Image 1 (tube, rainbow, N blue to C red):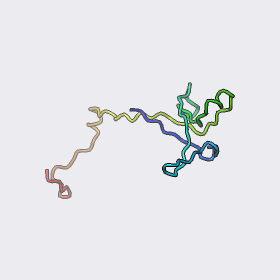
Image 2: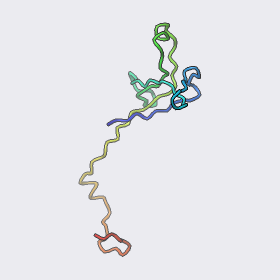
Image 3: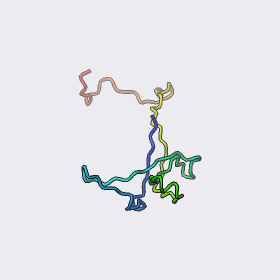
Image 4: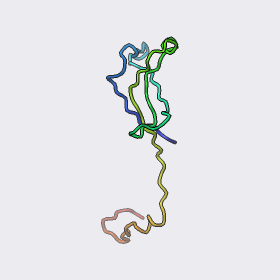
Amino acid sequence: MSLINLSICLTDLPKDKIKLSEKNGKKYINLVCASRREPSKYGETHTVFVSQEKAEREANKPIVYVGSGKEYDPQPQAVTAADIEQMPVAPIDDPADDLPF
């Protein structure tokens, strides 16, 4: 599983695109997260922009970019024999050890 850590500039969100839900009274905005063709100079692999309606796309309205992101793949690192050799030796009879086994 890979994750995408995003950073979004809230002040760049267009106020006219924020919708108020009649069901719960909360405010929502539709955003799009897209892969970049090439990573940015900061290693960002994704970009975030405000979703456009069909009429806006057909009128070639400019895209409002509000953030960026970087892909993160949280893979656990395998323990090697060298790692085990470098680990400190655990004391066998430690009075501070209150584990029952």
